[in-house]
Length: 462
Ligand code: BES
Ligand code: MN
Ligand code: MN
Image: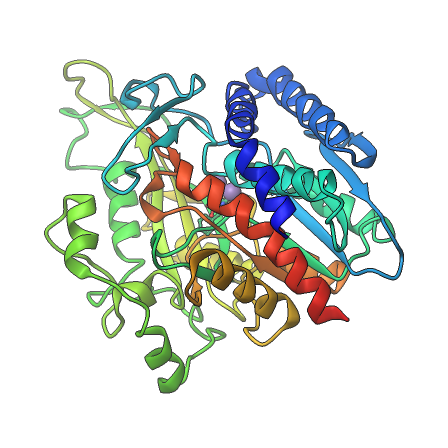
């Protein structure tokens, strides 16, 4: 594949500028104020797919944000790779915490990215990673070295739960037929320690509302006499975990997949520095479920976190009030065999039972998703391993991640296809946070590695 790699080398600057253009479009899927920008991003991407020579490029309308599709079918006898990614991004808030405006990308050097990193919302999650595939396929097509058929399906609703993509996948099984799904929307251990993601956690996400008295009350007249919903909510949240930080919801662990000692020992071989982990976050120590290491707590064990909590008076100064209502958003990350619907039901039942007399509780489920694991002996995984070994010079380590990409389980259910998660981000890239960034090294390494995957996959499928 030297011609393809030569083409990549001579077009690096343009590949970067094209990504920067995409990053300038604030395609925030969660906020309807940005709907026009989301459409603009889909249009720009569709034009790009046409430009690189894909056929049947289409902007597929959904009830929500559109899906961009394009394909190159060279020969029905060749294997087909379906590339999935997302062009939508998380909201940029809190905007004041960004060093530079989130949709005005700049390149700056960092300790972990001495050759520079692109700072912008979506730089790593997922525009930068998704676009590596567009540029890799462009390069293979330009040099007549594309060894597989390829289909692109890039959605605009990953960050809000992929509900409409689920419907699209169910309805378009024919069009989406393929041999493997290829995704770059995860991370790797370090720039000199490549890894392939072999697991994703599932998600159950709920919003809770605790109601006390029928109106806000004077905290002097009523303080000490009635249940304060905010106090009660805090107590209820506290009761969700025991003193060992295990989750206290009856039945919660019933279906949790238990790893063998051998599997855990294998996992423990991946490099991990507790000190570096703490230093990167400016914390003195980690915290989590007893009996498990930090990498285990964040991948093979479920977790429960409050993502937001509000109620009462939060404005300037002091207002003496007992609020009528208190709210929280709570996420539970799930591991293999846990069913998000079942977990949401268990949570709801238990949370209601925790409410003391004088309060009522409402639990509203939000989107969720199933966990996924991928085998390390499949043709897809082995091809990815070949590819990393070629571009990095070392064999990648299989690592289970804590994040979620709910559509991966759906691909398996609906299309019967396994997914290869070739992520090139770093945990320190601040995805979903202010100052999100993506290393230039990582962007170019991804573009270099992807053609090696296609080559290896075509060979192994023969
Ligand atoms: N790309 C991330 C998921 C991810 C990041 C997985 C890093 C592994 C490593 C994705 O865009 C994401 O943020 N997913 C959401 C779930 C979704 C239902 C909103 C998540 O994990 O919170
Ligand atoms: Mn993502
Ligand atoms: Mn994300």
